Image (cartoon, rainbow, N blue to C red; front, side, top):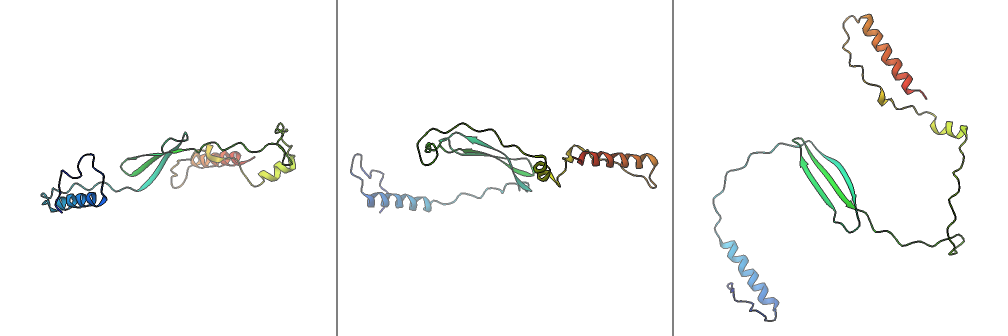
Length: 162
């Protein structure tokens, strides 16, 4: 059936076969159009080395999720917005299956020195505060260069102690 721009008529009941025939006719017309000339190829974009998530923001319930992307020349960067869920219904109150009000929060329990020592045993302080030495050593090393190495080693040991 050839495409008929007068079909379906205004205010007429829709007939699915008529609509399908009109859509198929339009498709056939579009497919029969000759292709235009091929344009020149664009330049190759730079390769990217990795994808990086720059941040995730929690949105309010009902807001649509979002993603923003950018390219810094080496990395594809993403920033996401994720909506949190709606608050759930209030649960039952009280103990023993009753509906009484919840009691107040009690004081935190005490931790003994033995428990604390056992919990941190084998750990060290954060050594991120110790800067790198950045020293080029001559051959043979000078007394000053050796002293700088000793000083940096002492700084690292002291920073790693508890």
